[in-house]
Amino acid sequence: MRTGVARLQVATCSASGSGSGLLIAPNLILTAAHVVYGAKSITIALDSGAAGGDSAIRQAQVVALDRSADLALVRVDKPMTGHVFRLAKGDPEIGDRVALIGYPFGDAHLSARFGYIGDLDRTEHFPDDEGHRVAVSNLFTTDAAMNPGNSGGPVITPDGTVVGVVSGKRTWVDERTTAEGTGWAVSAAKNSGRISSWSKRGPLAPVRCGGSDDLRDDQPIAVAISGPDAGADGDLVAQSLVLHGTAINQGQYAVAFELFTPAMQRRMGGVATWSRGLGSSYWRGIDIRGVAKSDPTNLLATVRLRTEQSAEDGPSGQTCSIWPLDYSMVLTAGVWHIGKAKLTSARPTAC
Image (cartoon, rainbow, N blue to C red; front, side, top):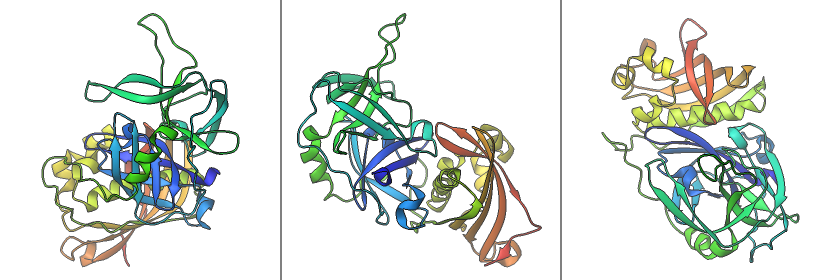
């Protein structure tokens, strides 16, 4: 069952974040709308062992999103091998035992939290990033622990049937009183018809970030995690680097720039200065050779990056280059941001 729970990393025009989701078909992931709302780039990962040794990291596009239901469906660029979940035909009962499965805090390790159904058929108003309040209907409550990164993950019964999708939790009653044990999930049964119709759709129109939105290149970035020391964090690092590289390939340099730490952004001198000369550069592949974590929010990743570029922009006239790099990275909002990138040899080699 764990092989069907997805970890999402998302880059918007001005921020990045993480969430969870569930496989409902080999190429379709169901998640919460607020996880992918405004997404310019999305990467999705399943367990590393779910695809026979494949890193199981995919790029994805939103095919449907409804904020009033807090549900979205995304389609991956290549089918994934994992557990395909079954949606319940009816709501649970008050007092039923359930489990939440997902990746709280964008962690590399899947976790489960257990609780009981509190009440049904709720409508709640959630604040969004634009200062508005969005009414979400067909919710039920549970006292199972929810944390950032759980959003979009499945709520399941003991037999593995999905009765809901994690939406959010209540933390305050008023300015003086905190709330405990009240998490919301969207009813799977009440939205099953909507989800079924969504599966037949093509991708939504791309999000506009200003400037040029012409798609320069949509070739997926090849991912390998070959180093024995990469560990579970290798997948997380790969997801973050693919977000960054995809934005470069699409010419969305402001999006890619947001995946640098503030200190790195200052060193780069701003988006325009950093992106100068990238017009002919494309990321084609990354190989994670090793990951060394100094503490929960800092790591050093040893990476081989393969790029293609014009001879004019390439080192020593190379049109295809292998860059041996050490990336110092910092965890923010469940996504690893690039703090430093250091070439570990005198120069890149030709492919």
